[in-house]
Structures are given as structure tokens and as C-alpha cells.
Image 1 (tube, rainbow, N blue to C red):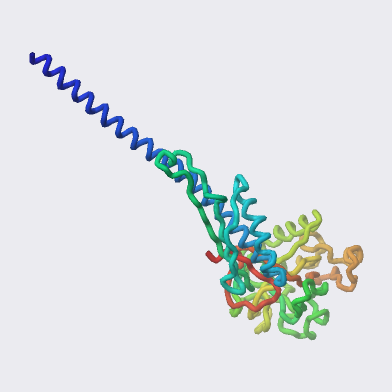
Image 2 (image 1 turned 60 degrees about the vertical axis):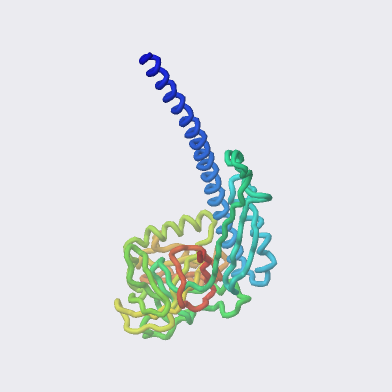
Length: 341
């Protein structure tokens, strides 16, 4: 009888364990289903966020460059960029609003009744609405990092909002040409080098940056950047570079101080920055023959002796370059477009 009692007790324990395992399996399956659907929702959220970010930036850029079509094209751009940034192309914009005159907010969502769920259906949840939003703003940059040249605001010629491209100018080391001052100007030529590290400098509008006149030789690291410009131009592309703009210069020589007021973009045509040599990359398209072949007045050439020059024209330009940020810079035709949240 004792053996029969022990066997009966063991069978009861096995039965209890089986019931517990069954209960735990149901819970485990439920948690697994929940985890899979949550992962799908997170992936969908990321795609919707990409669409919202891209749409907001595209609308902000259009509003900056084409104010008259700002609101009219907003939904068209949102409908274009939102699905293009989801893997299956099914994401849709849900709202486009303008919180301020210089910002736009785009909402995105899954279409119809939402994202179809797979395992959560077991618990009566067949779908979930997933949403995202992004706000982009635009305005003149107030700080930035880039190539270490600064240009005078007296050379800036995009004085009208209807002017998108300025005249081709020669920013020359020797005074007396285009926007430069008379002989003896403290920083001749309307431009100058700024202190830099490996041909990169950081400036802020409203502050003074130390530099030198453009007669000095090419800083270390600049040859690599200039060669990239050469390669890009030779491949048929434009080289548009955003530079700090100054209104006053004090002192001179290697300690010239440039008061930065904002940022403007130059479309680079040619240059001679390497001293007496006309060799690339220190010099490029700086001769009369090169300019004539481009239909540009040969008087803007600077190929002799120790001439230094930049041959370029101011353009209206917008950028999403993270090297530039918000601040108190004057509006000089260059605008940063950025995500503000």
C-alpha cells in the first residue's frame, strides 16, 4: 500500500507540473507575440520619422527658395517624400502646419486603420496606428565651420531678393579691382585668411576672428580641399562654398581682425592661392585663356608673379550642412535648413 501511495503522489505532482507548463507556455507565447509586434511598430515608427524629417526639410527648403509657392507646394512635397522614405512606400502624411513664418511641422502615419498586427490578434488587437512628426526651420546661419577665407560685405551684390546670382568678381590681392579699396587698405582685396587648423576654421556672427591678408601662402591642408574642388569642377559640377562675411577690419598683417556679420555663398570659378606658381591645385582657371573659354571677361585673370585671387560670384543658397548653426547672422542670401526637434 505504501508503494501505491507514493506512485499516486508522484502522478499528482506530474499532473500539476503539466498544468503549470501549459499556463506558462500560453504566457510565453503571448509575450513573444507582444515583442514581435512591438518590434514591427518600432521599425514602422522609424520609417515614419524618416519620412517626416525628409518632408519637413524639403518643404522648408522650398519655402526658403520659393516663398510664393511655400504653402501651395507643401502637401505635394509631403506626399512625395513621406512614402519614398518608408520601405514599402505605404506611409502617408497626416498634417502639414506652419507654427511660425520660418518653420513647418509635418505629421506622418500608417495608412488606413493602421499597422496590421500579427500575433496580437490572439488578444483581439488587429492593428495599431503609428505616427511620427518633425519640425524643420530655416534662417540665416549665425555660426559655421569651413574653408578659412573671409570676404568683405562691400563685395556682396545680392541686394535684391529677386537676384539669385551676382556678377562674376575677382577678389584680388592687389587693390584697385572690383570691390577692393585703394592702395594702402589695411586688408587689401576685400578678403583674407582666417586662423585655422588643417584648413578649417570656426566663426560666429557678431564676433571678431583673427587672420591675415590674402598675400600669405596657402595654409596646411588646403591643397587637399582645393584638389577636391578641381575634381568636382572637371567632372561638370558646381563648387558652391559658404564663407564668413566681415564688415570691418582692424590691425593688419598676420594679426588682422575681421568682424564677422554673417555668411554668404560663392560659386567658385577659379583661383590662385598658392603663391608664384600657376600649378594645380594652388591655381586653377585663373588665366585669361581659361576665363575666355568660359565666356568670362579675361580682365578677371590673375596669373602673374605673386598674384593671389579668387574668381567667383555670390549666389543664393540653402544648406542642411550641420557645420552651420543658428545665431544672429545677417541675411546674406544663404540659409540653413535644419530639424528643430
